[in-house]
Figure: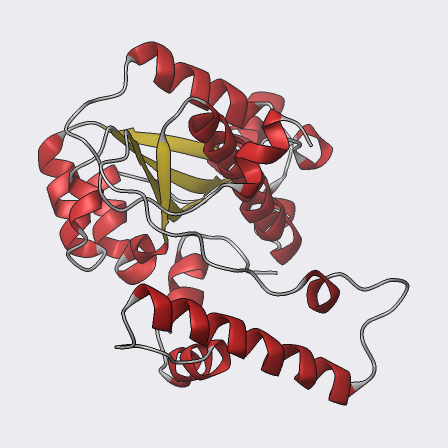
Length: 249
């Protein structure tokens, strides 16, 4: 155990921030640590857009589902899969890269690169005493986000990250048991064991909610996730991505 591991294990989403902006030095440190993340074949297929304009923050907060912590935080970042600079490489080097950057493989590379960079940024921010919250609601209306952030073809905004000084710290949610997530040599073949692990985890989550809400809530994890997945959401995503000339081949 060390301070880095303690920081990672102490993670929780923060949804209430103090009215205190991050300094330029803090922002640049967080972005620099994001850039230090691993990147497939050194392709660096992502960009990070910092949103400091309050009007833009307010509009983003509305887009993502009226989440106040998107508008009120120390700084807001939007992580994008970005192959636009690689399209520019074709012009610079007088070569044809379009079949490659329009492939599903390169789209996956760009998404993975962005996610790795984001997690570095999250850990860096938390190590500085700040709190973070990932915002997947960015994808509720990517047309609006694209218009607001003026992202070109070959760029897809993936998720946001609210960062700031915590005004309220929530309880940490218990994760799935290690033996359910970590498997050695092959995927878990015993369905009965798989289901038993989920049932045990359901009891843990139900107890967590019951204690946190004084008995007002005690739903299980499989119940919660099943109901969420039963509802179709963001089904326009494939068309949006392909309209941005990504994931076409």
